[in-house]
Length: 303
Ligand SMILES: [Zn+2]
Image (cartoon, rainbow, N blue to C red; front, side, top):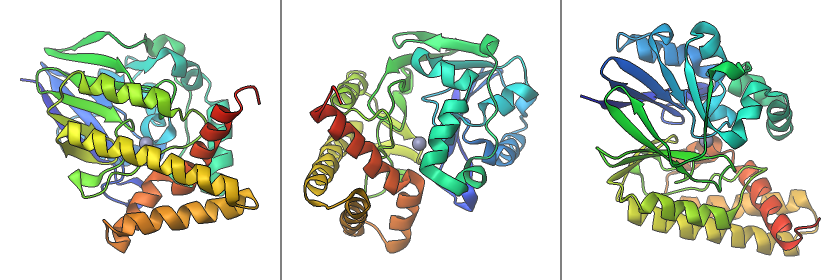
């Protein structure tokens, strides 16, 4: 009997920020998004509490390669060289050589990078299984369909369990802690593309999922309603960014305006603690940078 369980990685000491997903079927164990290297010991403890170990894992399925989802992968392979790592073709090079990814993350997160994400090790090419979307993976008795869902990242995939009707959506369906009252975009640089993202919502809805499972954090009920609200908010936030970029004298003023406006919006739905939790998990300033980059690129494709 296949089963899906959620492992709380307690990122930076904050529960319900990043989930790793454990799939078990016929004695085969797969992790979807093992999280950052900084939470490796929490992952190990979560596995141990289920009588499992890193050596006992078979597969790692990555929705995308951002450090909060995939940063631990190299460490896992070093400890278990038989692990098979599934990733979309467009993201694989940055797993094999994470130098560019780490340089980009370093520019975005600054001196907080090591504390938040730990040491990101490369993944040997021989462990990597490339995905394009459209595949069906057999993990024990469990079938998992791969949907290509770019928008948040150019190489983002969603894993769909057709038996349970669960879409493991990574960051494609936003941030919503345990089906809470607010769904927040996470739109970091460099890949944000709202047109592609809209198609990805359709790709997920085409499968008529019964539930979404979000990395940040947990199950979301009523996928059609969730994705409808989220799609509208994503475009709303792009509109806020566009307006601010037109009127602000410089980028740092623009960022301050964006943070003030989005946090005020969140406070209509969430407690102050929850606003901080959502903002921290998403890296709210990064969401401004990603949307600003998207808008400038869209308006000036040659530039
Ligand atoms: Zn994420």
